[in-house]
Length: 433
Image (tube, rainbow, N blue to C red; front, top):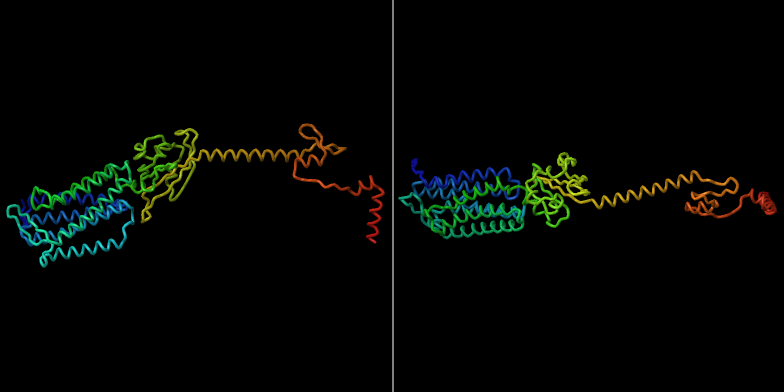
């Protein structure tokens, strides 16, 4: 027991001190992950819980009613903020970043200011605590509850119930792969609620001790375990909302260290591995060394390439597409790889190229024949590849789109039709004169 003027630090103070330490640790662990949805509000919640618990450390140690009243009022900064942050955490964890209107934050801030004004002016209206009694044996204060306290109690439990509801919705939507993560979140949410209900309605093992901060201490341990072991503040919940279980294309969601944190059943078929095996694997273990994946993953924005996975699935070719996930500050927080089977497309493309090649070959053969036509020096007939002789008109019409119109040249007319040639010449001479 430590005595310091009007404060008596004993066993009851030490109940809440570990709560403060644990809540602060959890808040600082979460803070670097604050850009992941929900993490910011949960970090703020733990800071509020730490302030609440620290104020109670001093409150239970105070030896006078005015000091206990003052420190209880100080504790209400955390007491009234924790339900709000829990509600905001549940909404954002369920719906995603930027899902909370700014006006709603202003409303909560105004309500908090009103609550703090009512708390620090309780001696004027006694609507929060009509009376405060000091137990000489334990040095604990017993607070009676006024009308405003019950209004505040209902308001806070509406917020807590709302947050709990949104967490349950997220748990069902994210599916069985995230059952441990969701259970960790739900248990972490239940513990402080249970502590508060024990203080208000239950059989309190130590009368006048508010077990709510202790519930937050245990909640902090559960959440810290989940953060470090289950990694439920990674990108998986974000990515899960955009994955469709029946997609034909394989999808791999990677964190900043290129570890697979989410996938879909199509990838299980492509890589012939169980889904649980794929999650937490290094992506480089999935692809052949010839893929040159390292350079591909260093792309700043969208990129794609063709890869051959014949070593995994015989005669299968895929198009690999890379998308980069950024936060609102344009920092890279993950990557998405999409694998599309293009085997049939490549077959059709190969057949088309083969057909074009054959046509080009045929055209080349036609051009060669046009350049080496065997023609009779006397009758001018042309010999084909089978050795048959054809008239020039017949051959050209057969091997081209040209057609013929027949006439007679002046030399042949004079040779074969001299009379007609003389008449034509005489007519032309007259026309000239």
